[in-house]
Image (tube, one colour):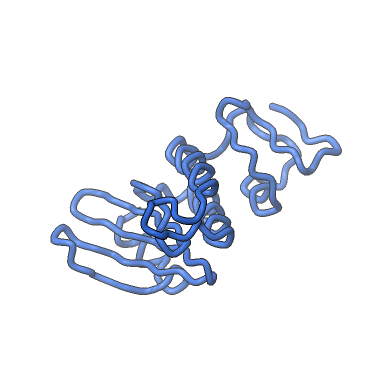
Length: 155
Protein backbone atom coordinates (compact mmCIF):
# COMPACT_ATOMS: atom_id res chain seq x y z
CA UNK A 1 0.00 0.00 0.00
CA UNK A 2 1.17 3.53 -0.73
CA UNK A 3 -0.07 6.71 0.87
CA UNK A 4 -0.98 9.88 -0.95
CA UNK A 5 1.14 12.63 0.56
CA UNK A 6 0.82 16.17 -0.83
CA UNK A 7 0.65 14.95 -4.45
CA UNK A 8 -3.03 14.97 -5.44
CA UNK A 9 -2.27 14.98 -9.19
CA UNK A 10 -0.40 11.68 -9.11
CA UNK A 11 -1.89 8.25 -9.51
CA UNK A 12 -0.17 5.54 -7.51
CA UNK A 13 0.25 1.96 -8.58
CA UNK A 14 2.57 -0.20 -10.66
CA UNK A 15 3.64 1.61 -13.80
CA UNK A 16 3.40 -1.46 -16.02
CA UNK A 17 -0.39 -1.57 -15.57
CA UNK A 18 -1.23 2.08 -15.18
CA UNK A 19 -2.31 4.63 -17.69
CA UNK A 20 -1.57 8.23 -16.92
CA UNK A 21 -5.05 9.70 -16.81
CA UNK A 22 -4.95 12.59 -14.43
CA UNK A 23 -8.28 14.20 -13.84
CA UNK A 24 -10.61 14.77 -10.97
CA UNK A 25 -12.94 12.10 -12.37
CA UNK A 26 -10.14 9.55 -12.45
CA UNK A 27 -9.12 10.25 -8.89
CA UNK A 28 -12.74 9.67 -7.86
CA UNK A 29 -12.36 6.05 -8.97
CA UNK A 30 -10.45 5.51 -5.74
CA UNK A 31 -12.05 5.65 -2.34
CA UNK A 32 -11.84 8.83 -0.31
CA UNK A 33 -9.08 7.24 1.73
CA UNK A 34 -5.52 8.44 1.35
CA UNK A 35 -4.27 4.85 1.05
CA UNK A 36 -4.43 3.18 -2.35
CA UNK A 37 -3.93 -0.47 -3.27
CA UNK A 38 -0.68 -1.47 -4.99
CA UNK A 39 -2.62 -2.75 -8.02
CA UNK A 40 -4.46 -0.48 -10.40
CA UNK A 41 -8.18 -0.92 -9.71
CA UNK A 42 -9.32 -1.17 -13.33
CA UNK A 43 -9.93 -4.43 -15.16
CA UNK A 44 -7.50 -5.66 -17.80
CA UNK A 45 -10.16 -5.19 -20.48
CA UNK A 46 -10.69 -1.53 -19.57
CA UNK A 47 -6.94 -0.93 -19.40
CA UNK A 48 -6.60 -2.48 -22.85
CA UNK A 49 -9.38 -0.26 -24.21
CA UNK A 50 -7.82 2.82 -22.63
CA UNK A 51 -4.53 2.00 -24.35
CA UNK A 52 -6.39 1.59 -27.64
CA UNK A 53 -8.19 4.89 -27.00
CA UNK A 54 -4.82 6.59 -26.58
CA UNK A 55 -3.80 5.27 -30.01
CA UNK A 56 -7.14 6.37 -31.48
CA UNK A 57 -6.70 9.88 -30.06
CA UNK A 58 -3.56 10.29 -32.19
CA UNK A 59 -5.39 9.76 -35.49
CA UNK A 60 -5.43 12.68 -37.92
CA UNK A 61 -8.09 13.74 -40.39
CA UNK A 62 -8.42 11.29 -43.28
CA UNK A 63 -7.10 8.46 -41.10
CA UNK A 64 -9.01 5.93 -43.20
CA UNK A 65 -8.03 7.45 -46.59
CA UNK A 66 -11.72 8.22 -47.25
CA UNK A 67 -12.00 11.59 -45.54
CA UNK A 68 -12.77 10.48 -41.96
CA UNK A 69 -12.52 13.17 -39.31
CA UNK A 70 -10.02 12.76 -36.50
CA UNK A 71 -11.63 11.63 -33.23
CA UNK A 72 -13.06 14.59 -31.32
CA UNK A 73 -11.54 15.40 -27.94
CA UNK A 74 -15.05 15.45 -26.49
CA UNK A 75 -15.72 11.92 -27.76
CA UNK A 76 -12.43 10.61 -26.44
CA UNK A 77 -12.93 12.21 -23.04
CA UNK A 78 -16.52 10.97 -22.69
CA UNK A 79 -15.65 7.41 -23.70
CA UNK A 80 -12.65 7.37 -21.36
CA UNK A 81 -14.82 8.60 -18.47
CA UNK A 82 -17.44 5.95 -19.26
CA UNK A 83 -14.88 3.14 -19.27
CA UNK A 84 -13.41 4.24 -15.95
CA UNK A 85 -16.69 5.03 -14.22
CA UNK A 86 -18.57 1.88 -15.22
CA UNK A 87 -15.77 -0.69 -15.11
CA UNK A 88 -17.12 -1.90 -11.77
CA UNK A 89 -20.30 -3.09 -13.54
CA UNK A 90 -18.37 -5.72 -15.52
CA UNK A 91 -20.24 -4.96 -18.73
CA UNK A 92 -19.17 -7.33 -21.53
CA UNK A 93 -16.83 -4.92 -23.32
CA UNK A 94 -15.83 -6.25 -26.71
CA UNK A 95 -14.34 -3.57 -28.94
CA UNK A 96 -13.58 0.15 -29.20
CA UNK A 97 -13.16 2.05 -32.47
CA UNK A 98 -13.16 5.51 -34.00
CA UNK A 99 -15.99 6.58 -36.27
CA UNK A 100 -15.73 8.55 -39.50
CA UNK A 101 -17.44 11.63 -38.02
CA UNK A 102 -15.17 12.02 -34.98
CA UNK A 103 -17.22 9.76 -32.70
CA UNK A 104 -15.98 6.86 -30.58
CA UNK A 105 -17.89 3.56 -30.52
CA UNK A 106 -17.73 1.01 -27.72
CA UNK A 107 -19.17 -2.40 -28.54
CA UNK A 108 -20.49 -4.89 -26.00
CA UNK A 109 -21.08 -8.56 -26.75
CA UNK A 110 -22.26 -11.53 -24.73
CA UNK A 111 -23.68 -14.70 -26.22
CA UNK A 112 -26.43 -13.76 -28.62
CA UNK A 113 -26.68 -10.14 -27.46
CA UNK A 114 -24.72 -7.10 -28.57
CA UNK A 115 -24.81 -3.35 -28.02
CA UNK A 116 -23.09 -0.31 -29.47
CA UNK A 117 -22.52 2.93 -27.59
CA UNK A 118 -21.50 6.03 -29.55
CA UNK A 119 -19.93 9.12 -28.02
CA UNK A 120 -20.50 11.90 -30.52
CA UNK A 121 -18.40 15.07 -30.97
CA UNK A 122 -21.36 17.28 -29.95
CA UNK A 123 -21.57 15.59 -26.54
CA UNK A 124 -24.57 13.41 -27.34
CA UNK A 125 -24.62 9.63 -27.06
CA UNK A 126 -26.40 6.88 -28.93
CA UNK A 127 -27.07 3.42 -27.52
CA UNK A 128 -28.23 0.51 -29.68
CA UNK A 129 -29.12 -2.93 -28.31
CA UNK A 130 -29.11 -5.83 -30.81
CA UNK A 131 -30.19 -9.46 -30.81
CA UNK A 132 -28.49 -12.36 -32.58
CA UNK A 133 -30.09 -11.52 -35.92
CA UNK A 134 -28.76 -7.94 -35.75
CA UNK A 135 -32.27 -6.66 -35.14
CA UNK A 136 -32.35 -3.47 -33.08
CA UNK A 137 -34.05 -4.22 -29.78
CA UNK A 138 -33.75 -0.68 -28.43
CA UNK A 139 -32.38 2.65 -29.64
CA UNK A 140 -31.84 5.42 -27.10
CA UNK A 141 -29.09 7.49 -25.50
CA UNK A 142 -26.81 6.57 -22.61
CA UNK A 143 -28.58 8.74 -20.06
CA UNK A 144 -31.96 7.15 -20.74
CA UNK A 145 -30.66 3.68 -21.56
CA UNK A 146 -27.95 2.89 -19.00
CA UNK A 147 -30.32 0.74 -16.93
CA UNK A 148 -31.45 -1.02 -20.13
CA UNK A 149 -27.82 -1.73 -21.06
CA UNK A 150 -27.11 -3.19 -17.62
CA UNK A 151 -30.31 -5.26 -17.60
CA UNK A 152 -29.79 -6.43 -21.19
CA UNK A 153 -26.58 -8.18 -20.20
CA UNK A 154 -27.80 -9.15 -16.70
CA UNK A 155 -24.81 -7.58 -14.95
